[in-house]
Image 1: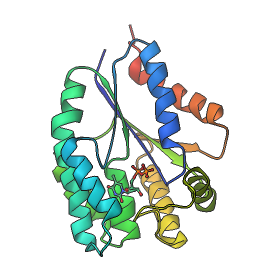
Image 2: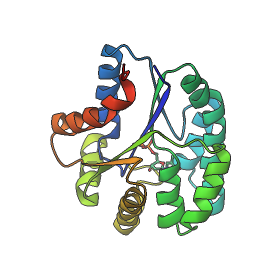
Image 3: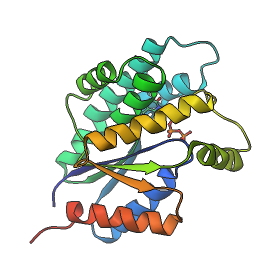
Length: 210
Ligand code: TYD
C-alpha cells in the first residue's frame, strides 16, 4: 500500500463534501485508512484562520487573504497531510492549492503564477496524486448552496456571480494544463453517477498492482 494524496476542487455547491464522504466509505471497505481533511481549517490553528477568512466582517486586503490561506496550508501540510502519507494512508482533502490559484490568483486578480508560487512554497512542494474537479454551472451551484443553507453565504460565497464564473474557468484552465493530474467530472449528474466516475479514476491509485 502506498500513501496517496487526493484533492477535491470545484465551486461552492458542486458536491465535494458528499462525494468525499462516499469515496471515503468505499476506500475504508477496500481496507485503506483514510484521512478526510480540508483547507482552510484542517487543524486547530487552521480553524482559527478559517474563521477569519470566511467570517471577518471588515475588509481583508487580498494579499493578506492569500497569505492567511497559505499559512493555514503550511501548517496543515506539515502536521497532518505529510505524516498521513508517510503512514501510507489515503488523504482525501477538500480544496488545496488550486483553490488559492482560482480564488485569489484569478478571481481576486492577484496573479495565478504568483499565488501558485506562494502556495507551493507554503506546502514545500507537495503535489496531489490526483485532483478531482467537480465542474458545475455557477448558477446551479449557488442555488444548491442557497437551498441547503437558506441563503446564508459566507464571505467568499457572497461574491458576485462573475467572481464565481472566473473561479470556474480558472479551474477548467488548470485541468486542461495538467490533464495527467486532474479528473474533470460533470457534477450536474446524479450523485451515484459522479461517484462511479470518481471511483474508476481512484481505483488504480489505491489498489495494489500485485
Ligand atoms: P469550503 O470549505 O469548501 O466552504 P464550505 O464548507 O462553506 O463549502 O471553502 C471555503 C471557502 O474558501 C470557499 O469559498 C473557497 C475559499 N478558498 C479560497 O478562496 N482559497 C483557498 O486557498 C481555499 C483553500 C479556499
